[in-house]
Length: 343
Ligand code: F6P
Image (cartoon, rainbow, N blue to C red):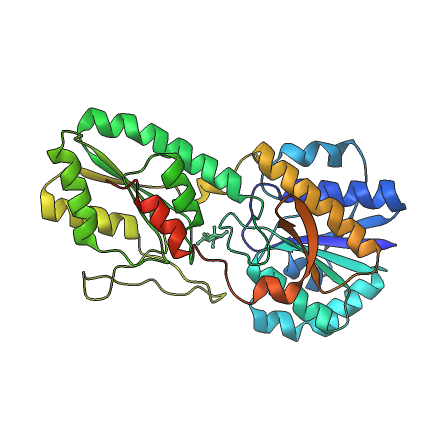
């Protein structure tokens, strides 16, 4: 058989580990060949591809962040309009099945292709960990490690200067990175999109720390966080050309407001894409590798419209429809657990 793979949407650590595992498994278990399309769906539509060989070069990419295939975004309308071209390109290249590695948007596209007769297996990735139907996406552990390391470092400088330091982490619609990094790093307050914040409550928590003699504070904020309605002025972001929400720096907004209300010295650090770059953690390498092995096996077995997923200790196949219906948000009980440590 001849398999194809591509990486689409925002990059994340572990993509190369999946590609490596797909190529090596396809070759060693079945003698299948693998083609890699460049820059996600865009490369598939433009027929930009190269053969991927089970050689020393592919073996070495396990440690590399990013994706050797490049990634890209495509508006869903353009993607759907290109179905005929996609089918033609896959047929010309002699592809029997496609393995699409990506987040919610990519998996939606994969499902649509499968519904339209193209054999597709999905592999869920995103640092945000917001794909439903899997316990964890790879990339999340690395992002949390980076954010936790940043918080660890902020503690010592905040303490030395008696400052409130705010760290804004990624998390467009969900607060998994903020929740985990905030808890692991001992942040004194964590703000997530699922739980609109009350600026008065955050300020009070910081004031309490200063009154108790702990004259510094760390606040971990997810970029998609919003204030409770009517509690403060706030301008929401816009949407980009792909329909994704953009942001106006909620960490800075919270910092400015705490400073205005208390007079404390407040600074904000935005971690941004640092969380997405660099080498994956051991956990992410293992998860990504397991996903890649199972995706290659599923594609070879002729399965389609399914997605590999982690359930407890096992990697299983789930319908792509289960992975894309709704985002996996932080449940209120998980936030309540984190809240027990605030202040
Ligand atoms: O990968 C998901 C994510 O990291 C979001 O948390 C973030 O809002 C978004 O990607 C930003 O991606 P980009 O800057 O590539 O548009």
